[in-house]
Structures are given as structure tokens and as C-alpha cells.
Length: 340
Ligand code: DP6
Image 1 (tube, rainbow, N blue to C red):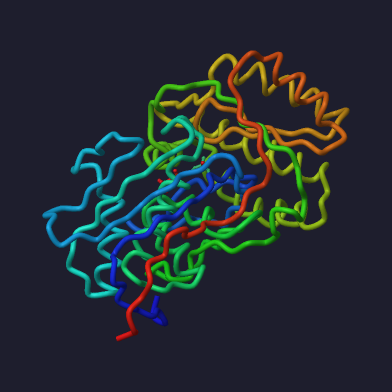
Image 2 (cartoon, protein in one colour; image 1 turned 90 degrees about the vertical axis):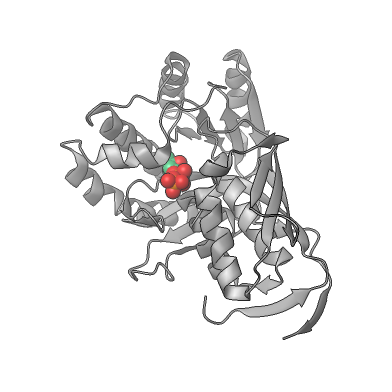
């Protein structure tokens, strides 16, 4: 973040809104866990209707940084990842104040619905804007990555690719948009199989997965997944997208089930939906994925939409119906005083 500009705002407050993202080629495993640097590239799409909106205020009078999510005060000792983002902003701007963030999610936390992605993306964008820090999209993506790796991909719009990068400081590890939301206007269904919190965090699970005897094979296969997924997306090739999503997701879950101790993210209903979509995908343009949780995310083309929607209603579970979403937006950027 060397070419950053810094203007001192006269009111140190801003609001940002970010969308959750769902990976087609998933991030799984870190070469540096302090900086959330991945072993390989990943590819995802933003979900228009799953959002986090966060207001950040830099305040002289407070002694410590604070975050509330949907009115719940997050315990201070769990703010570590957010503190990394805020300390980076402090060191880039020279601000010594504390940052108070209040966040609203329109979906449940920690159920595999990628709340950390939209959460850290919105927090990073709001806190940086409130501090008057003008970052490029790549720099903002790198900053959000410090909170949660997948948050890097909620900064750019539409279909995005997170370049793993090679540098030790992570300055080349950020996401870029590979296609805008309207490039391929698929339908997205996020089926909420579980409302409870996840039994293991993604970070811990990624670490644990390296104990699987299949880890070396997974690493080799997953490292090629982003190129395959990106080509499928750029060519709007639904058969290739289906292969990319199903192969990548099931390899991740097979890895999780074969590590020590084993991790099974599926709930019985996840398996039922998965089997149904795998069967349906042989006849119509529909496919699905599961992240590190029990929920199932389904994508389909317009032609398959009426059938898929009926099937999803028949599962009898709550679901969010959406489209491919945009990038982070800063809604209340404060007026700036002249630059230093
Ligand atoms: C399965 O980004 O939540 O959703 O960097 O430790 O916060 P941390 O992990 P996180 O992991 C997401 C894992 C995944 C795959 C993906 O989104 O690419």
C-alpha cells in the first residue's frame, strides 16, 4: 500500500456495504496465517442479496476499538483480526484514535454463509474511508484480507479472482474482478440448512485438513481449479462451471472428512439437496456448492429456473434468492479537508 493518499476528513465517519461471496474454486489453506495468505488462487461470485452494512467512526474519546454486529457487542478479546485492519489504517494515516464500528448483517453469522467475507470487507472499506485513506481496489482488497481471506473477494464486483501472490508481505495477494455481475446473470439460491454457529472455524478447519493423507493431492488439484473456473465463467460454459463447482467443493469436503480428527460439515439435509442437484445437473443447467458449513448454494440458468425454484421450495427450508452481486460501496464518505 505504498502509493496511498491520505486526506484528513473533517468528520471521521463513513458507512460501507459489502456482499457475501461464494467460491467456485475455493480458498482452503494458508501459507501465512497472520496475513491470511493462501497457497493458491480462488474464484468466486458476490451474492447481491446477502449484505453487511458497517458504519465506522474514529473517536478521540474512546480507549479501545469496538465492534457491534446486529446490536450485539463483540467481546474485545475476539477483535484480533479487526485490530489488524485498524492498526494498518493507523500506521498508514498516523491516526491515533480508536475506531467504533457498528455492523448490520441481513443473514445469520457463522453458518457458512460467508458473513466474515462481507463483514471484513465492509469494515475495512468503512474504516479506511472514515480515516480519509484513499486506497485502490487492490489495496482495499489486501486490507480486507487481513480480517478474513475470503473478504478480499468481496471488494471487487461480480465474478472475482483472488491472486494468491508470492510476496511475503502479502502486498500482491488481492482479488480483482474477472467479469461484472451482468456478464452472466445466473440465479443464485442460498439454502439455509443450518441456523446455528459452525462447530469449527474455517481457519482451524483449514489447518486441520493438512493432516489428511490426501492433502498433497488436494493441494495439487485445487491449485489448478481457479484457471478452470475462470475459463468456464468467461466463456459462460455452464457444463464447465458445473464440473468446476462440484469437483472443487466435493474435493474439499472429502479432504475434511479424511483429516484427523475428521470434520463433517454436512447436515443430513445438505446431503439430500446435494444428491438432488447432482442428479438434476445431468438434465438441466443447475449446479451447487457447499462452503465450510451445512448450507447449500445453488446456481442455475434462466431455462432451468422454474424447475429449480419449485424443487427448492419443496425442500421446505428457508432460502435467499438472489443474483450475482456488485462490489463494496462506500455510502457516506465524509467531505474532506485539503490533503496534507
Ligand atoms: C470454505 O475466509 O472464512 O468459504 O481467512 O481464516 O477467515 P479465514 O477463512 P475464510 O474461509 C473461507 C473458506 C471457504 C472457501 C472460500 O470462500 O473460498
